[in-house]
Amino acid sequence: MIKFFRHIRQRLVKENRTSKYLLYAIGEIVLVVIGILIALQINNWNEQSKTEQSAKEQLKLLTQNVSDDIQKLKELNQSITAKISAGELLSHQFQEIKPYDRLTTNYLVEILFEQNFYNDRTAYDKLILSGEYSVFPTELQNQISEYYSLLDRVKEREEISNTFIKNEIEPHYFNTYSKYIRKGSNLHPLVVNYYKNDKRQPISLDVEQIKNDSKMEGLNFGSLYQSRTQQEFYEKAIEKGNLIKKLIDNYLKTNVKI
Figure (spheres, rainbow, N blue to C red):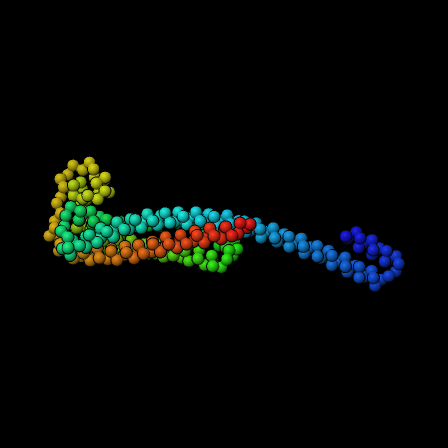
């Protein structure tokens, strides 16, 4: 096409038809500009396609990250459920709804356990840093961002509970009830396994001591509150994680070409 314009231009010059020559010269320039613009557009399309493909791969990794999160959250929720159950049974004993028994020392150990959620947010962070996050619909972006904000609150809630355990429950427990951490004195699986070869004589629970231990009762009440609140966060995060997986799955199915 450019050779065609050049041939016409040369003929017009020879025929001394200046005005038409200028028109054809302008046409040639316009054609070149259009060609450049088309090339740039094609390059932009190629770059956009690469960006979208990369974003899709990261989204698949994010789905796996969320699946791993859900599994960990379920395990933590199961653990906190056991802790709540121990706290409730201990509370019933303090209230004399149920008698103190061989499991009392078990309950005291159970409420000492801390909970820690660790998650892998590599895919999410990479999407944000690369700018690929903007490829997705706003609603999907918002839902994913809300999910990771919720996980941050889960960790904050755990930190509050764990600090309460370390600063309040542990000092009182180890000052008052650590003598029961031995074979035959405590039926908690962790203690039983650790002290399976213990040769010392078991120590029976001092019922009067724990009955009158109002501080321990108060600490157990605080532990129950912390644990129930923590469990609510675990359950919300599990529910949100399942929603995110569903939204991503639907998005990938309807955007198979990206």
